[in-house]
Length: 166
Image (cartoon, one colour):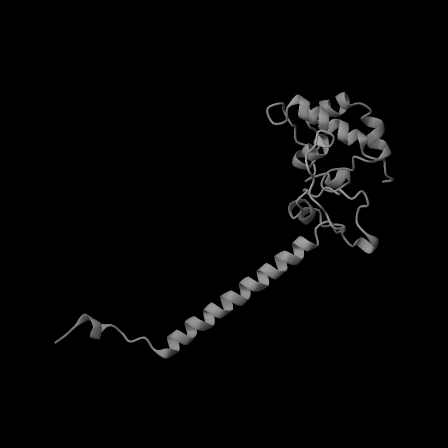
């Protein structure tokens, strides 16, 4: 009697061992990738690591401690912000601006804390006008993206940032 079962090639122990080795390699690779990503996330906020700081932080890179990076570039622990009416501008800044101006400092975009910036944008209206139209590498933020009320809060927050040396 000729059955279909007997016509199939037999699986050898060698092919099972190869499959097991591939499975173990995949697991080891996954563990290494997770470890590297975790290390990258833990480095968020270190100088020059603005992408990790913006993406890996619950505050989107905002430095809520007021101290900035610690001694020798060691990042400070960051805590999440609780939205209140007093920090609405900071929360909105984190949502719309912090990816390029992390903590108001120079990253992808220029620093919003320099004397030059503070001298050029002396009022919320001037800052809002620039942000609405965009320019240089800055994209325009139309009213359909950010409401006038939100833009006013963001501008007030930016103007309240302390001035720092360039």
